[in-house]
Length: 167
Image (cartoon, rainbow, N blue to C red):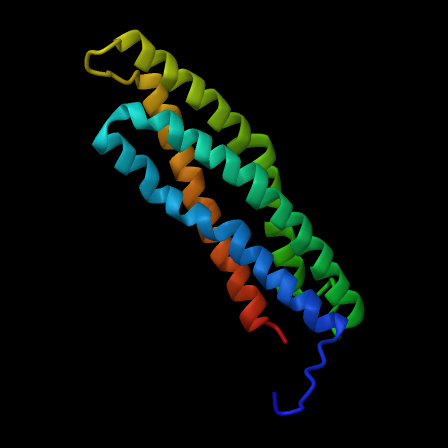
């Protein structure tokens, strides 16, 4: 080392944790947009794994990330020159709350339900061809549509954080 000391303050640490939580918490969820169609094309017998993976991502990545994002975000508001009434900030907080509600109230229960449903359909097929019910397809399509919407919402929050419109 050249004798230089790098000083990192609590605000910078908070900002790092905030961004890292967003990347880690939501990054993998974007891959789920291709996981389901890929599993369906390869063999529907892979679908229980896809639902279990989505469930675990929601439980162990998304929800903890939301806690870190909100905690560090509120710290940054308290320490920085931000106001909760600023459009970009209040909109971002509202979207993060919507994302947490969708994750806890919809995605987690839906993946549990869809995993069990598709596993029953696979078991019923035995070694033969798996024919997915219209009900399963409809519910899986709804989850995929809401997943796309949440991806857009995540990108909207990123835009709001970067551009801070109205400032």
